Image (tube, rainbow, N blue to C red; front, side, top):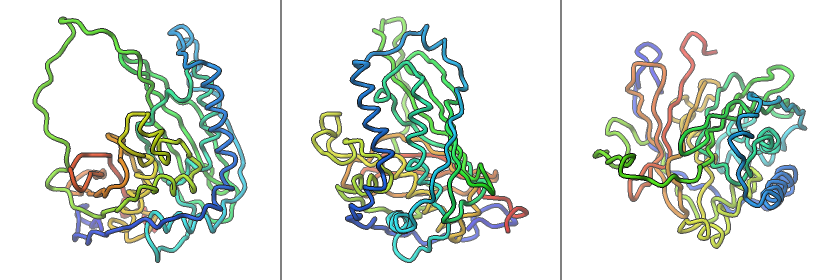
Length: 337
């Protein structure tokens, strides 16, 4: 818990060992039909484009920010939400709101539509991270009012950076959750010459700073990606079909980046907020390396900063390699109710 007066850690919270429950009931797949249709649409558009890339001229013609796509969605199923929160947090955690970090489940179809104006196949887009601004909680049983918009496109030498803005709320608070999803499109590598080759300096090995405290460990199974897909609808085969993952260059299936973020979100609520979801105002993370399943990941936080922003890290328990790094903010004492 962060101390209200000194803005530093008052005491260390015992690290939790978590085993995401499995298997998740397959019946939840039938609630993902809209997302699955979008995934099939992405696959079809890729085949049509023959994996072609747009020209710089087409990229320069883009109107950014793009059009705002707005949808009103029916209330989410409480049973699915209960099982999802159990998967993220473990048994005994009370479902008292729509989990903010599940936004990809309802937002993916709109996000795909927002990105459809790009002159590139959707399969070329690589997820790099996400920032969640939490302006309030979404109550259970309410219709969702959501928007999606291509917010920014920046071309660099080796990649194109893409930012998509997604808002989720209800009639009482239309922007209870604002998500900025960061992605890149790698560009074909240019042949290096002696003139532009730079010698890399000595850098530190992947790892977590000594001042960071371990707050949780998650023992992930080979089917953890498949379990998360049942909740989110993201059935990209690299997350649950070993052969497809290996064809994509991985040793085995990998965990979704948003699944990592969900686990971290709940870890922060437990260890830093006493379980009160209203105290977390911002979570901003970047995905650094894939989580190859099965494995165990550690979540650590550094709250020694005197600012209002604290650091969070996800690392491999065995190798120490970083999988994810980011920051989070808690509401100041005066604004806590």
